[in-house]
Length: 164
Image (cartoon, rainbow, N blue to C red; front, side, top):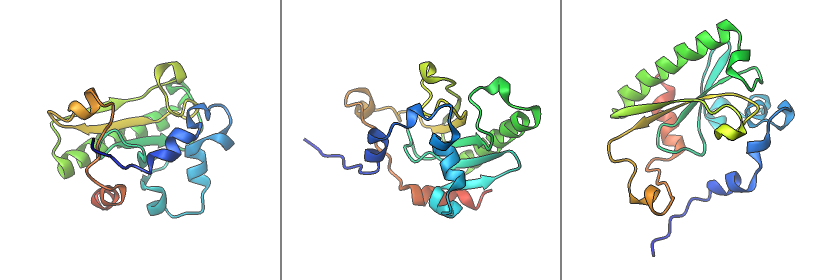
């Protein structure tokens, strides 16, 4: 049997981040913004007026980004027009950057709003953008329910940060 060692996943499976809903004090995104650590240590790639771009530290695939409004809101229809417009423009920019850097065959772009919809952080909406390649769902994901990420987050950050 092969052993896949991924100690970074331990924090994810032992923390209750999925229930960081109503209270911004319990929200992982709000805590990241309030942290005194630098953007590089927090994996924040870009700060715009209303939103920021961050690497998903529990990625489904290399290059998994999230666009997050600064405002702690759970529902897309609660966003002001300037915030939602900027979120859309940043998503488009992220797609262009990911296409240039990683040359994927396609993309998954979207949000899960609410715990029932699969939101990992139900109280603070965020847009996911993931580059995808033909054949990137292999036997590991299909049978072993395990994902393999071939690139360290620090390397992904270095590749993408200069593009913003």
